[in-house]
Length: 75
Image 1 (spheres, rainbow, N blue to C red):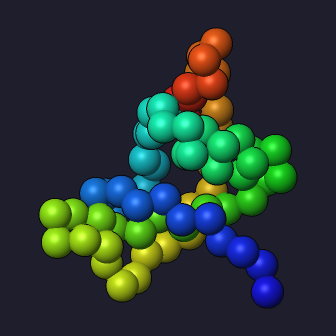
Image 2: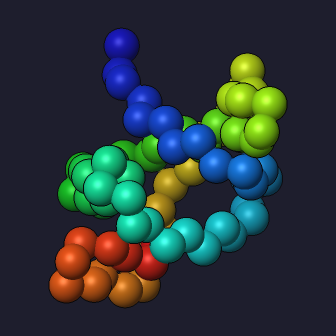
């Protein structure tokens, strides 16, 4: 069984919706870098003040827009 990396966010991804993200936390820089390198999808799970939702969705990275010197990135 393949492992799916999860990224908790307060956004909902719909089919064909483009979600621009600025990646700055170390753990998510690693997660996204791994997904780019291996052309893998990752999961977005909805998170709000009540906690994590029970469902989420998979997303793919269409473009690495900017890679900053400190590892942050815009995708």
